[in-house]
Length: 86
Image (cartoon, rainbow, N blue to C red; front, side, top):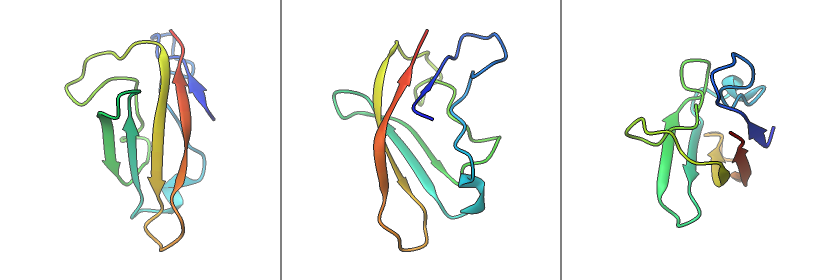
């Protein structure tokens, strides 16, 4: 998925990445358009899903964000963009 809507309506409020929980050593890092890190997790299961806030818990604006996912198994990192729609 490349977009989610963290608006409190209980649908698509977090960025779920199907199958990523199969890689317990993965790392997910998300950056804003200026290259500032806004989110990071080691492992990515339901308790770790990104909810569209920065590292201090502040809601981020509607925009596209750059992500890097390292699976932790030696494979090439996965990179792309994800959009917050408010």
